Image (tube, rainbow, N blue to C red; front, side, top):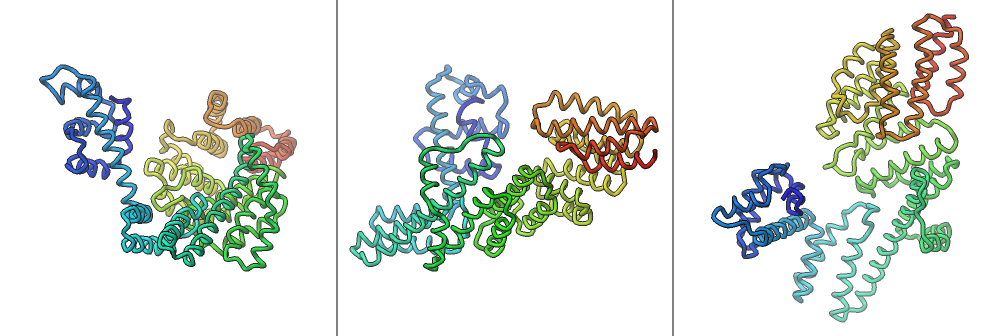
Length: 488
């Protein structure tokens, strides 16, 4: 049964949902006529892994019906019933957790039951809840659109056409706004997907629509007509335009100003997406013009944290990648005091299974930059290397620590292991591999000079490193090369 749909569903249940599902199963209201409580009790013993050999179909059947011969159809029927109840339970939980969806569904029920009083009361409740909602582009104004449509249908049904028309205007506005924001967002995605994955996100319809809309004219008219929605269309238009014109810093500054003037209008998830838009712009610009905008990127990260937009919602953890990127940026800019506060405050925002390793990696980087190389090595030794996702970060930092501590034998051994790892692994991109390979090659040259106390070529290597584009830990390599050059 391990591969059954039922088991796949039950695996996603949280501990609380599992307990609530037991009540659901035992409720006579939800019964399909067959008693599925026995099957539930059998499966309960194997939650949450469901990987026991005792979940073999025939063994499960023998447990449920010890005096009967195995009957495939009978087991299939009871399994199907419990599967249906599990799906019904999940839908019920979703409905209970979303008060707006609950009101929307209830209003439709009252409408079908032709109870205008309860219908309007429920719509008014929904309207009140939506009035306090902040904007999120992934859903736009779909809930508002449904609300206004329901109001319009009510007024038309009661022959109050003077009241139905304003509602039609309103939901048409919501449909239009949702389309515009979604369309502009997808045009932005088209650029990112092409730049990052070299894939085309296009079609004759999408291209024709985009080429037909004069957004500049639209914004001008919205401003002239004093539309309340100017800010929204303008903002998402500038997200797209800034990415189309990464050479125009003033356009990016305008985009940021528009956002910081209206942050209270966006929900947390949208802020999270917007800050990632800012990071995408910086990365695209740096890639196109071969520039480094570490301070600009770090400033965006700081703003992201100030606005609690480090994850899409309060219930979601900070991604390990974001934590790592902030760590690397803070370290590269020498923001050590700020970084110490970051470690103490935001490590707990990671998933529990990542906290210990990431905290030790962060502290190792901090100690290294402060010249406490043995402390840095001690932190790295605490990391569960076999399961840690950032093995390259550890190897790179360890090589630099070995260099600083004159641990030549360990360093040369690590060089060989690092090269073999990069050659064999498919966990990292070719670009990242190239950066690390270039680092290893220059590191090896510098290490040999230091170990042999021969630094005649250090000046030449320093210039060679400076000319090299794709190289990890470049500033550190240049610093070490210059130190050797002074010893000539």
